Length: 173
Image (cartoon, rainbow, N blue to C red; front, side):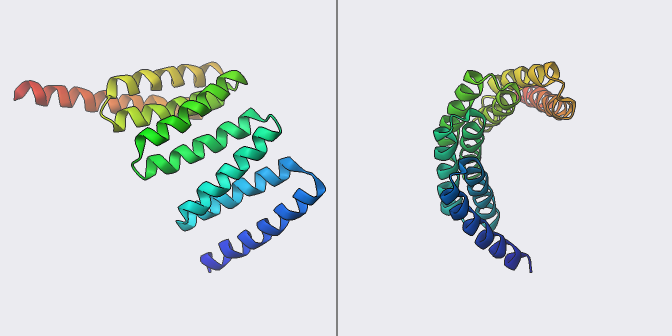
């Protein structure tokens, strides 16, 4: 049933993308192409998801919508991160961070900093990852994103505890 639902959604969204394109509604077109990318990602069709995210990114760029463009860069980065391609993920996250900073999107900046922090921790550079996570936490707190700040604070606490345990284990050897 669920497979059929996502196939139906893909069909409907694809038809709607064509209509919005004909009408010249680039924002609606970009939003739907993004949704198509999410469906493909959920279905495990990664190449199609990447293609959709790149197309949505192009449309957002065309509209000078930095927030939308950065969102797509983060989604592409997440796919590469999930595949274990951390360097490629980092490249996309850094592009997103630059756009978020240019457009003064503090929420987007903090979210992207968390993505970058995750890459650093995954590469074994926990100190840099924690530094970036703390920067994201400050930004989330500053803009009143309490739920996000609480999640980041909890993740920082867990990471610090893990680092302490690792240091103790190393000193015992």
